[in-house]
Image (tube, rainbow, N blue to C red; front, side, top):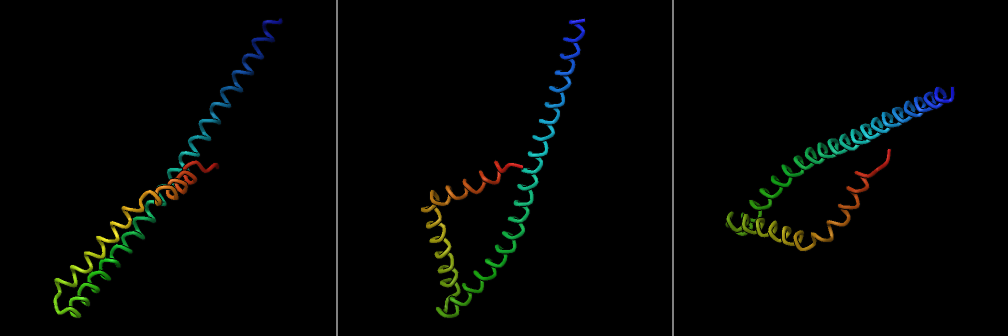
Length: 116
């Protein structure tokens, strides 16, 4: 009789543990799916907006180079000035890359470790 009660309690505990493990797995699956979908939607937005901005920047750069070329009476000089401008922007970004890492790391860690 006592052994039957103990066996029944053990079975009850075993069922509880199985339910807990199943619920935990479901929770982590849901959390990983949520993080993955947030990442995919963010990447899609970045690609779409980045593509449009890149095309706009290309046309603006070409028009600025041709405009400077007509002012300086040399298209090559206009393109050279625009190219040097982008090189300077690249150098500035390279010099300040450490200051850019911290805010990006904070933003993405908040995004990744956000609770449900």
